[in-house]
Length: 380
Ligand code: TRP
Image 1 (spheres, helix red, strand yellow):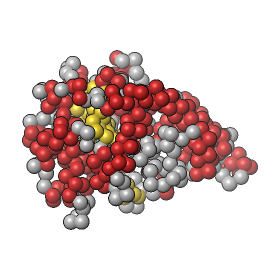
Image 2: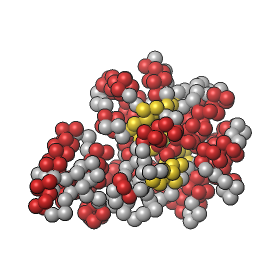
Image 3: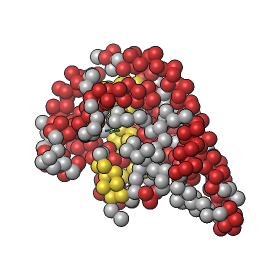
Image 4: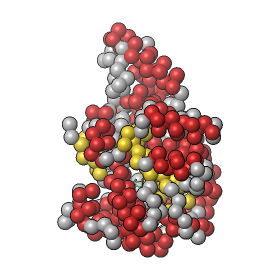
């Protein structure tokens, strides 16, 4: 089964082993996990469950980044969000993990909101639409619990004066044939889109520019963004900066199932949004979640369910931190003790809990929006 994976299109059955090969990224091995665990322990943190379960599965140069951090050198994190709509659960996965990394490294985080990108790549979106989503997405993102003092928000069109001089330094070293090959562009692609990867490269070295010294960067992101950073890593040494390290996660599969050929996406309306209320979350899960259970209760009790394809179970591997709890759910589901409706309730309860926490924090942050959006302006 084939796949098509660029930052703007994700289709097919994702064979992550093949993606590792095709992209030239490295699998996170036991030795690396151990190094991360040792660093986490010093902060009283466990090894994150998304690392324990291989959801964050690949990287570039994490070893180097950990070396630099271990020497006591200043480091920073960079991730981002394309504000093309409301934030959904799929977006939450790398963001939750980034919050963990911020706690682990005690580092500054640069969060890029690529309003330019979404305007350029989405025919149906006006710049006004994108700006509206940007503000809402910033609140949702910060409500995950990032350290307000250590997090800088970059909004591409707002901070253009800061980003553009750096972006053109990058752009001058990238040819059309490189972006064609990396992103699948053709002669019909608008010229803003062709330029865009230069904008996404900038935060990977912006702190080094602002602070006038080279600072190692780690970029946590969903694997579809890797082509940007492959290009970025080629260029930055030519400009005198470090190559950024990166760490990649898998996609949260759509409610419709792993075989439905999709990740959770805003373009289909069964996605679960951070803004959904409890009723909506429960309804979507009950109505759409692909089940690995049997057709009748009797049959399920006899034969048991299949957690491997069951979306409520797979989603629990993303969102339930407790390994023991997860194992019991797995075993009980497989033996037929736990029914489909029951496992749906378990994931719904968990999601409602997570979303409620985010919603509460979001309301508290609302009056600080201006200050948050100006966080970068104070740093130079
Ligand atoms: N292009 C990303 C998106 O569409 C947003 C983004 C910008 C990003 N910079 C990033 C994502 C760095 C991960 C890491 O969502």
